[in-house]
Amino acid sequence: MIGVLLALAVAPVVTVPAAAHHVGTYTPKDNAVTTNFKQVKFSVQAKKFDVALRLFETGALRATMRAQAATLPPGLEDGTRAALSAGAGAEVERLLMLFFVALARDLALEAERQLAASTASVEARTAMGQKFLEAIWRYYNLVDFAVSMRDSKTSAAVRLAFDEAEGYIRGTAAPAALNPCAGAKPAVGRAAPDPAKLCEPLRRIAQVLSTLIEAASTPARRNS
Amino acid sequence: MSRPIADRAGPTDPATAWRLPPRWVLLVAVLLIACAEVGGASMARFKVELTRWARSVALDRPAVHGLVGVRDVDERILDEMLVKFDAGLRLFHMHAEGMGLVILATTTVAATLVRAAGARRALILLLTAGGAGYPLGYLVWSWLIPYHGIERGKAIAEWLVWIPFGGAAIAALWGLAIVVAARVAGR
Image 1: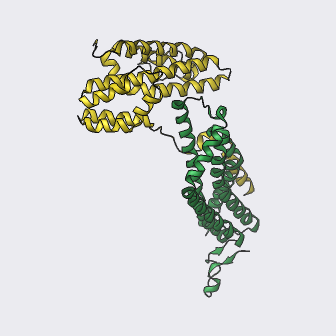
Image 2: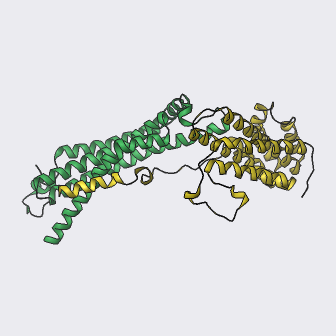
Image 3: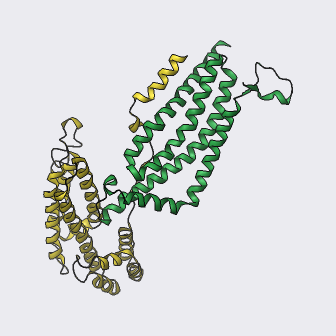
């Protein structure tokens, strides 16, 4: 009996405890800015411009536009309010696209700066890079469709750079976007994460988005 | 040590009567359930204070949590940390309630069906200590999260609490299952 008890007591210890011990999963939520964007967007799509204007006036979009006015394209707040008042859906879409593209660009610049300056361990820099990429994608993903409708090459360039950056974080030898049919790479063939190489795709993301901001700062230009 | 449950109700057959586990076991089980209820009530009553405390401790340790000083990045890290902190408290509340009842049930079975005094004492001790200690791991994990991060806190709680106490409870339950199976086969 004692032998059996000892064997049973040891069994859980020799298994992998962290993997076996389930403590729930975390599902990221929208933040105040992305929530307010979706409210405004759906109101505009439903042609409820009065509702969209009220949501914009009282929401986090306008507050963030004001708080970050120094780094954003000029006239975003006034332009968005005017477009909502005039019921100009396409203009609202363009201005909100500019807003989120500018936020994503600023995050890419900050990520590049912090990664270049960091002397932390590879693991810490990898985690930092991962968090920045998630934040960039959270904003860019909201307007990727609008970007691709306006400038499909820019959309493709951002996606390629993003995939390359993720490849360096996850340790895959080639970016998934270069070979989308390849599926997940086996763990055996994976390279180690290389956050030092992240700066290059981040710089490219920032450059491409800056060019887009300059080009899209005047209304109505579509190339596709 | 163990007494037939039906003692005070009238004469009964000692061979078929359920026997109570020792009183200290009952006390541990009831205390565990009481702690679970207090924990659940405290989570609701002090939710804001607990969140503020966890957030402030985490903000004092940016390197531990990978905070980078950019709101758009940090808010998600802190949100995940607070969700897990809250999950740990909830899991303590639920596991403590459940394990209190598990202790009562399994030690009653052990007191009734295990004939050898040494094995009975060992099983009751393991069931009680394991069952009462295991839920505390969730409380420890929650407390460790702001100081050490989600994964590091989890690893510490695992090796300090979940593995030893959970292992003791699992081993005792298997031992009890073997005894019950032997009694079923040998009746």
